[in-house]
Length: 246
Image 1 (tube, one colour):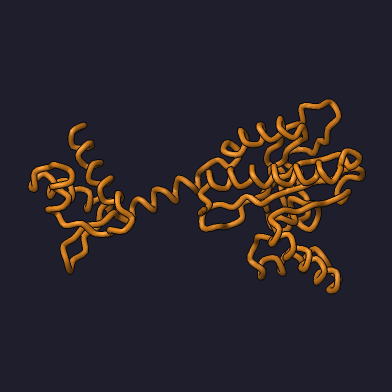
Image 2 (cartoon, rainbow, N blue to C red):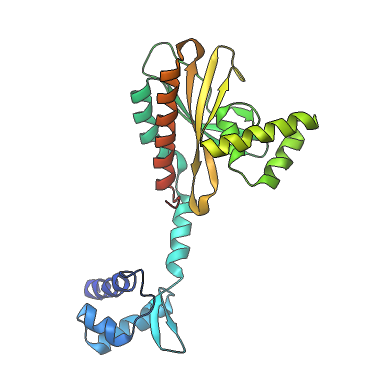
């Protein structure tokens, strides 16, 4: 049994070994894996049965099957966002000495699903599970800025009644999308500020936002520039772990 698995994996690894070669002849597979032709054919027949390998009927050549995509997408779907992000958030909190937050969208709000507190005694604390309207705060703005426009318009129609205000807000979102980060000052809590970057997953879909909570009186131009670069870098690292195409 173990030998069969080892041999089957040799075939799979060969089929994905060359990005410029999609299809393989049975003779090529046998040669490259150093398997007898009959053994290679038997193993491939089993792999085809489970959709792990596909045969092109016209040429009788073989390629990797779609079952692997199904498995991969299933794993991505079930990946615990918080578990992936937490180590990066902890490292970021130590580097910038501020509290770090992870938000995900939920209808017209976002929800704080993870928080790493600043190592300093004076720090900003927002509660886990707190719901915040998507037009309030840096984290929410960066989420909106990376959503499909028709969805954004639908959300803003529910949150902002004045059409002129909505138009100006959309212009702000366009700038946020172009810059790759968002800033907010005192929008949720007076005396605080926030800088956020989007977390993008598979198919480049927005998953949530990573943000740094800051006390307004500590902000300098140099400090702000540093925080922006750090939150963008960390959000990108999390995004790649979650399947974002580079």
